[in-house]
Length: 126
Image (cartoon, rainbow, N blue to C red; front, side):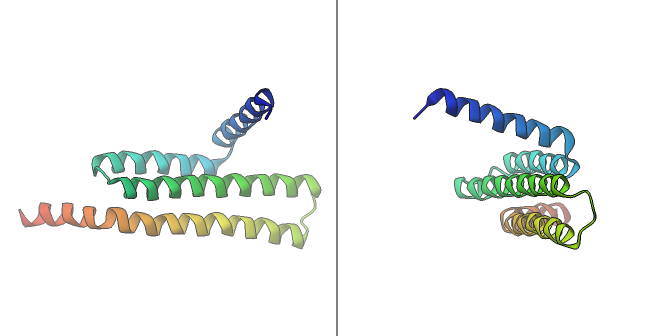
């Protein structure tokens, strides 16, 4: 195992993360959503398993968005023309992000739904 090479790879990954955060609108949206979810998670004092589900959901959406961006950039590099196949590839990659985000919303519903419902009930029944 070459530690120097490995550290260099982590540096490249960090650079990629910064590029995503600085230049990709959808990634910025997901990052903001992740920050808000973490704040709400702290507020509701999630249990360990709930934190795990939230963190995996955040990581999955970030990963899907990163792959989608990489695929879109590669497609743009391959052809500047509006080819049907390239459009299909980009649409399918974007669908992957949508499916991942939808799964995260399901997790949020199960983790936060009962807590939010209790807040509203406590507020209106007091």
